[in-house]
Image 1: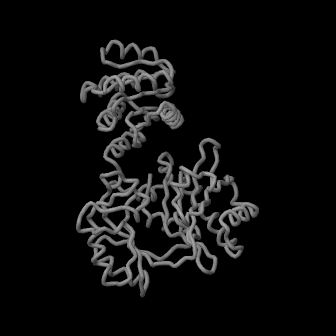
Image 2: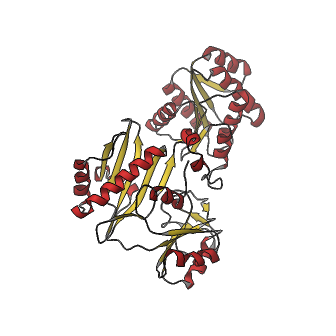
Image 3: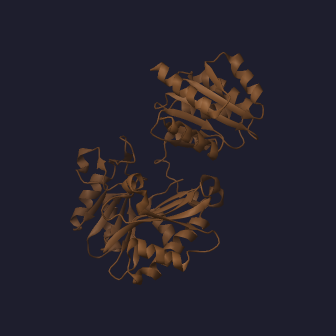
Length: 400
């Protein structure tokens, strides 16, 4: 689950991370009222609150919003209402939202903070190393996406333990890598340990501060913030679960959540149905190695029945980007025959207009194969994952 910038900043501020004072506003008049509560004198920052990066580089679909992006520097109080009117109720398109963009229903009014320099920082789960990784990068001349794609060596990666914060020698390593003055050492340590504690205590899967600002006195300040939470741990954090913005979530994502499934969309053309995060990563890696990508994946792990499985499969079938479906199930607690019965139920309701390849392994796999064979549906059955990937790719190419 993702949350908005202002929500992430409120959480991180509880862990001693400094940030500019800000207030949320839902109307232009409210935006003007809160400016004086944020700062008696300008300038101020107006920030569209959508769950996307690169908001400053975005553009609005509506003419009334003007040509400025989703993050604006406002120097005069009289310009607050005008800019708020342009942004609220308009659709902001960024490099991360896709062409449909996202509707701006609230804006964050924040005190402008002058800094000497900026850098990127994040905490993420490194699933390959089974560790929490701390990331830093100098983004003065470029953005983090360009660095990650073309210059990964310019990103510092440090593994952090679960039982204590960052070590002194690691602080020195970060200072040297970012070429920060030693007077920033204490603030940097407080910043990193605050991120680390927030990450662990809230079951986060990612915390990103982009950018971190360095003020004239060497103190660090979070100029932006983003937090993603582990959906499987939200039952432990009911106050965080309440922060979910259903308007931000895709309709198919919300439908999947009703059945306790995880659904994610990407830029490819193959829909994947799996029962486990490891299987999802393995399938997507297999497709990528073959020059293809996933349009989406549905993780159906957990207690399910035939009807829930059918509903989940319909979510994939009704995604217009999906040109083929690959189902890779490792039967254990989830029996393979339930998946087979769900496929038939879904196909009978919405049809089966794209190639569908299934690979079963584990509990009741032979029964599942028999169910599909007797259904007379045009389903391709594979024995191995790479065979299944080859089969769905071939079927898509032959259907073009």
